[in-house]
Image (cartoon, rainbow, N blue to C red; front, side, top):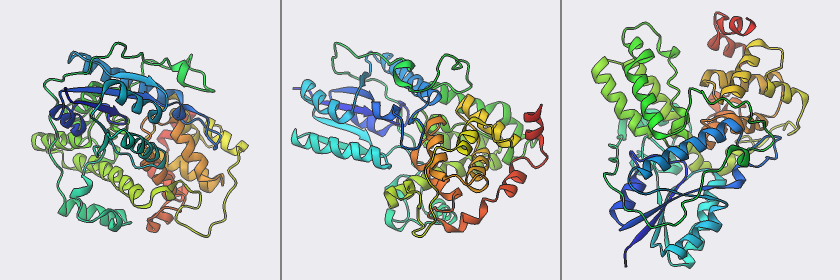
Length: 428
């Protein structure tokens, strides 16, 4: 009897540098790729927001569609299912006589709870759920400290990691894949089936962000070898003016952090892009840091009080102030322009996120959790660790208390728009 392995795709929608996929192919006769559109990811939340908004849902569907197309080029497909993974996967294991199930481990509570439940159910079927880690630049086992001893201060984490850990080479994209025979591979859901309480009629189809692995690799190549990347090589741009916009593809795993790292190493050798290279790697390290902090502290980042036990809590109310911030109608030109950009595109850069978050927390006095939940709805590069970790830091309830005094709104204004150019453009 042939050995079959079910490969459960989640936020790892790529073929390059995918250890889970490479090992599944090597240790099986056939694989069954599966993606589940979990209805819980598209529900209303307790924070007067939607779990996944239209722009984010569109980017996800595009990314899954691109993965399907890639697997079809190998003569197979990916099984598209709508429902809860813990209800669907055990049934597939029985139906197709699956020997093992492979998946990438997540760090946030909802995702890990689902993995645990599936692991327990599969155990009753005498089938192993094997965990892989493919979302970070540095592997957990390669860090110079165990998770429980990871420094809370980012600068210490960065210094020790860069000094004592190595970035491993990427896994090669498979040459060939043998697939389990499936009669009906399923169809991708329409956006109208996923999105709730949001108009999708005016959703733009010509966004600069289109989901999928090929789009991600093309964007990375263009960024390194044309446009801003080349301009920086000629010293015509300052490093803090460069925004790579790679994060949407990193968030869904269409792009591997290690792929970014090694491609930038090549660019550094070819063009001498040291300032540019350091800035992007810094962003990758921040992603790693928050993922590891989530493993260390689990649910603490989701609590309004965060790491401060004694805190005067602001009500989780759907106020007019919160609504004005969400819709970009606060009366502050720069904040409003940035929020309108977020609503229209699903993306704003890191400095803009910190500015609008600081405004919500310290100027409008709205509970930071409401802002974090809204970003979860809107951001196409949403990932729990980075989003909730950054919001907790801005609100002064994060694990690194050294950063709590960094978020003064007037200071943020000078950093983001020192000459008022953004505000003038918004006024025009």
